[in-house]
Length: 218
Ligand code: ADP
Ligand code: AMP
Image (cartoon, rainbow, N blue to C red; front, top):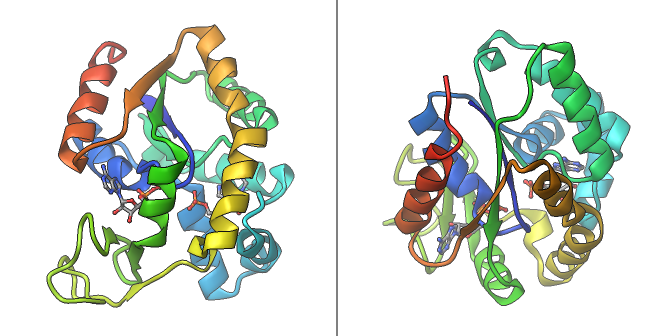
């Protein structure tokens, strides 16, 4: 299955992607994770992306699209994938269609995770991420047993630089202006399904999987 998760920053895309991708036996491809890995390794791509990420802006389409084209060309993406955080602009969505057409395939479904801005701010301001395994925690909603330490792997938890209040507000504006139009783009094609992303993580996963069952085909 080839699917995309869309929704504002903090909607729970990364959290749900981990469960949904495992359930569907497809790789989770998070453009944010790929950018962050490049930033921490100091690669040329990371150097290009860093200033945009720190400001809460989108990395330019040509950089992002080239990166995704490469990633989707890897063998593990052949039989399906879950994209988390891509596309984020209509031009990226158009390019994704082209990349998939070149591969002789197309998207099956786009899941929109729906939450309001107040909840997004609560979620992002308490988000903590494991430096080693990437697992996502929340200081109140999903706290690790020991503060600052990942229960899964013992790794160190950190707060993302772009999860500061002023940057969060800007990222929400960027979402409304540049990413929200994707809902119309995919809605017109009949492959969009909206999922209520409020409430406990497990409930959201259940809703997402139930919605996906309607689109799953061999
Ligand atoms: P996104 O990938 O959409 O930016 P994340 O998956 O990183 O969002 O989630 C943002 C924060 O919200 C994390 O700290 C995560 O633990 C928390 N979170 C995710 N889903 C829920 C939920 N259903 N209820 C409460 N907190 C959640
Ligand atoms: P995320 O982890 O999805 O919240 O992404 C973190 C940051 O990475 C974003 O604020 C952007 O700066 C950058 N980024 C991730 N995905 C994209 C994308 N598809 N297009 C442009 N920039 C992106």
